[in-house]
Length: 174
Image 1 (cartoon, rainbow, N blue to C red):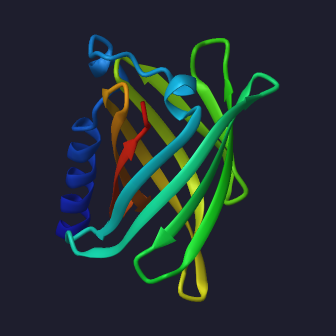
Image 2 (image 1 turned 180 degrees about the vertical axis):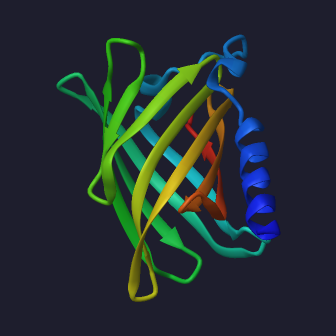
């Protein structure tokens, strides 16, 4: 019983401590999703377990282009263990200024909002690990540092519990 109460209190406190997209409304430069992701972009990142241990490092080459009012992002990952992965996102701007995104390994739609220099996504991914695939949730925060550089932090959870974090640094050439 004590364990259940402690767990419940911890979950309630962590829910109160989350950031809001509106916290970044005044930050500059403004995050223009189409402008940043159009053309070639390169990224470097890592996945860490919840204890901080780096499990995988990776490099991403991506190219974005507009097609029928949507932004298509073609991503190619190369991981530190030599494995490769590709993902194609189709991002659709919404009348309210938000974004919707789909990709083959995303369950349903990713929902994105921008404010100031920040883009916040939430989505569920089918994540292959060894010979098993897990459905994990991404709480993905992208912060534009300048018009060519972005830092991305994503909290990865399953059943509400953190399983790890992804950190990426994006560079869009001038």
